[in-house]
Amino acid sequence: MFLPEGVEWALHCGWLLSHLEPGETLSSRRMAEFYGLPPAYLSKVLKSLVRAGLLEAVTGPRGGFRLARAPEEITVLEIVEAIEGRSPLFRCMEIRQRGPAPATKSDCLRPCGIAAVMYQAESAWRNTLRETTIADLASHASSGSTNRARGWLRSLPER
Amino acid sequence: MFLPEGVEWALHCGWLLSHLEPGETLSSRRMAEFYGLPPAYLSKVLKSLVRAGLLEAVTGPRGGFRLARAPEEITVLEIVEAIEGRSPLFRCMEIRQRGPAPATKSDCLRPCGIAAVMYQAESAWRNTLRETTIADLASHASSGSTNRARGWLRSLPER
DNA sequence: GAGTATTTACTCGGATACTCGCTGTCCGAGTAGGGCCGG
DNA sequence: CCGGCCCTACTCGGACAGCGAGTATCCGAGTAAATACTC
Image 1 (cartoon, rainbow over the protein chains, first blue to last red):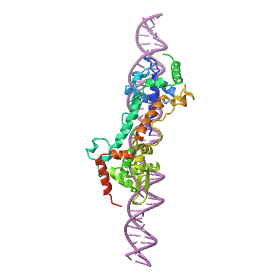
Image 2: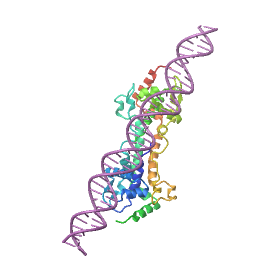
Image 3: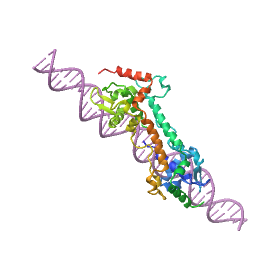
Image 4: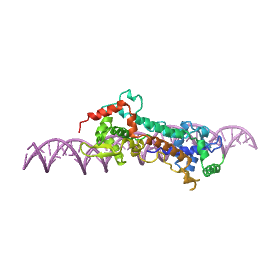
């Protein structure tokens, strides 16, 4: 059971978009080229980010995507949830209520110990992802990676 | 993207097996009956736990499963990994090495910031699951649940 | 030369196939106990 | 009544279908810029 591959793509693209000048956009086609990804599917992934309000899309020539907010205001968790969905990793099916000796209604007011542990672990996972923003990714990236991205962006046909 | 449903089943069955007397076993059929689960598929799930060394299986009449270790020595994480696999939730495809401006070998000695965050979050998730054992689940369970399980176990045809 | 209508090329957006893993099921090998037969 | 043999019933174990989410792709609507034409 893996996270969708699009999550990784979305995070990398978010990082790349944070290196644009204000107001500038970058097309899905360019990003797919930079990372060697299938353009059509990447477009689908980025569309999810637009729906979630994390990216803004500009149609037409010289159009593309840009961050809808400042990089400091976009967390890794938001991007993950935009692609993967807000549904919990662990879904309690309440099997304790089934069978010949089902749990009573009063017992089920609180989640069972198993669900509690799973929810707690998932909360730890989400909290870690929430503590990192796109800006953090950019500031902690190696200078080599940053220079490569900026250089490639400048090499694109201007305007 | 959900965790396999078998994870929940395995955890509940582990909890139930911890209520057996030493040396006693409980068949897959009985457990499926108790939780209202498809017997064949539950058997498949429990088989994974045997492969992982968490459960012991006894074939033949009056056979079944029992915990391979003391409940205090079996963590929730071990059960999850036995079903779901030891592979990480996030799998870095190293897309930074692809495209027209690939990352250099020296840059890739360390994981990129994105992979680092994902691994850190996953580590937090696993650590939480590792801190809880089957014995903890049993001790924190409501008295109602415990009594229901014990009572049902005693109601089974003896020997 | 300047303004304008047209063409063009490029973008995102939604609707449509394909693949693989989780879900679900089945039947076979093996065993422990119970029953039957003989002494 | 007692011992041994056989048989049955029940268990786990591995191999075989079905479905849904993720993967991948295509074409259409819309737009901004560049172009060509007219005045």
